[in-house]
Image (cartoon, rainbow, N blue to C red; front, side):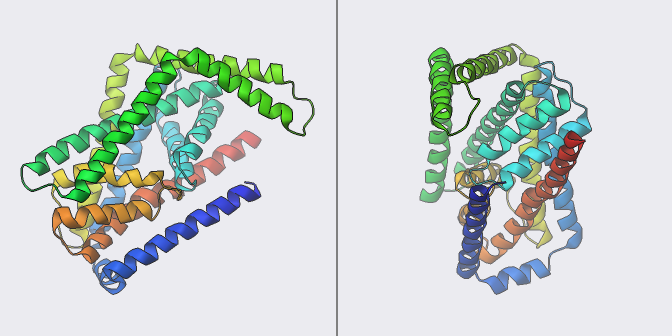
Length: 339
């Protein structure tokens, strides 16, 4: 990691700490710590176990998607590869930009597949997770609307989620329709940039041709996956299962401090809260927690300190479990590659 990346990481974690300090100040740090001190350790451990099931479900999504590209990865190895991707997301500002390229690199190393093949696979996993999350938002908000008045904050969050999904969908459609123009523009642009760098031995034409071929293969892989509808349906089901495991984890975290949260509320709060992961923070740390509290307090009617304590237990497992497992996995993969 170079100096610029280290600075970005330090600034990101500093921002996360600042958000946590502000959150504790607003809800009352003493009350939050008191709730955490009285949390049921058995249920806290259960939250951790369910988080492990979530990670396993989404690892199976990755494995199933890769099977559509004729890439076979053992279940255990797929788990550690996906955990490594989540680790990269959690320690990189604008997480997805850091996790997916690393995941594609790991896939290529453990399966001897091309880099662009792995990138197509992990990108498809992201799309499936977004689409399945939208399904949960619509179901959860739809049911919530039959039991309570939807507040302005929730309306804004839902509208933001829909706008993001529509924008991403439109960009994907345009990229697919004009892929030849996109490939030519990106290839020539990268080659021109490299040509201006003070390095030797880099032929812009060779770089442009190589990148163009890689992008062609990337789009070919995407097209190939669309023909594997049965496997993609299985992957979509596993993605939904992963979200449901997160719902159970959040409910268990509330139970650990002696409260409950309606399942239909957790169904839409979790994917909506994760929108804060787009903030320039490591894995959305601090921003996602604040978003969860902001959504759960008005929808559950529970005290802010109680909600914050439950969110910290939940996010403590969802965030830090992949960091521990994925960080160790990435180190092991790196050591194996060097060897």
